[in-house]
Every structure is written in structure tokens, then in C-alpha cells.
Image 1 (cartoon, rainbow, N blue to C red):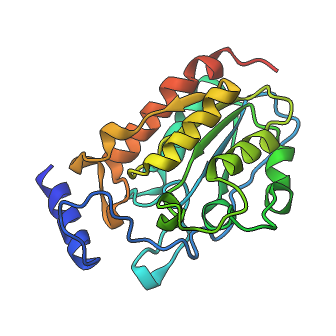
Image 2 (cartoon, rainbow, N blue to C red; image 1 turned 135 degrees about the vertical axis):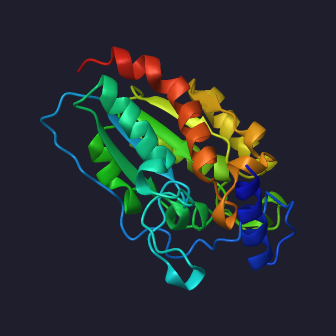
Length: 247
């Protein structure tokens, strides 16, 4: 644990943050995804799980900030980010399952407020995937001005989340997990929780991780322990549906 905390302090110092400020997000929403990870075989009968997120879900290489990997920031290896940890659990009980990633740092978090924003512009392929389980885990790159009510916007963040989850699951058959973020954003979380209640979705809480130093790693993103805790949290909410799934 000492090594984890020291690594966190070094990262914080390099980013000009106070070591104890676990809620700072020093990674800009630029170049986070090299490409969305899509592998889809329509003949397979297992459950289809769609992970919708930001840099914690997938961050492509960005040497300018010292990140040269192509997986969830800041796991130490591909198989240690929360998506791949969950994928391993899912296929252990449903070998025919398929998992896809939808990275929305630029297409939702930084764009939802624009007048011409629309799901049809960005997410048609994800809709065609017809996911049976959808994990919505994002929000960190929404401009802070929005929280303060100072961002001119054509719609609320909550309305955008609602539009996205409805577009991805038009028939209302999927299990949808709407999650708090890894950083404290009360307005965003309140709006997400309202969406979850409106649709009968599962609202997943993460606040116990916000100030857990051991869960934070490089760039103040979740390290291996944080990724494991996130994966365990989501698995606890989807495991029964995955185990019982039949197409």
C-alpha cells in the first residue's frame, strides 16, 4: 500500500496538484480513444454487454502526457482494467458472451450541450449491437462550468444520458447500470440517478472510492485496486442477469 500511495503522490506532484486531492482529473478529454473496440458476431447466442465510458474505460496512446497504452486508464496492464476484469467474469459463466466498448469523452461529455448534438450522429453501431446489458460510467469530462450553471446548453446532462440509454435500448429490454463517476460531481450524479429511477435502471454508487487513496493510481485515475473494486461493483449488479441469460 505504501508504494501505491507514493506513486499517487508523485503523479499528483507532476500534475501540479496537492497530494491529497484525489478528486482532481488532470487528463484532458483529447485523444482518449484511438477507436472504439467493436467485435460483434450476430450468430452468437450469449449476452451482449456494452461498456459506455471515458478514459477509465478506454484511453488510446497519448505520449504527450506519458500514457502509451490502449486500455482503461490507469490499470497497469490490459487485463487489469475494469472492462477486461468483467469480461473474464462474464465469459466464465457465458462463454458465448460478447463485450463492446463505446468511448464517449468527446461525443457526450464534451458535446452533449451543443445544439446539434444527437445520438444518431455517433452511436448507430452501438445500437445495432443490441446490447443485453449496458454499463453507463462517465461524466468526468463534462465542463465544470455546467455544475455551476454557467455553461450555455441546449439540454441538461441528464437529458443527454436519458437520450443515450434510450437510443441504445429502444425496446427497453436491457439491464442498464447507471453509475456514479470516479470523481465527486453531485449535480451530474443527481441527474444520472433521476434517469435511473425514471427507467427502473440500477443506480450504482461509487462514493466509497472517491477518497480511498489505495484505489487511485496514475493521473489520479483508478489503479489496479480501483479497477478491481469497480469491476466487482458492476459484477454484483449484473451477475444474476448474466448467469440466467438465454436468447
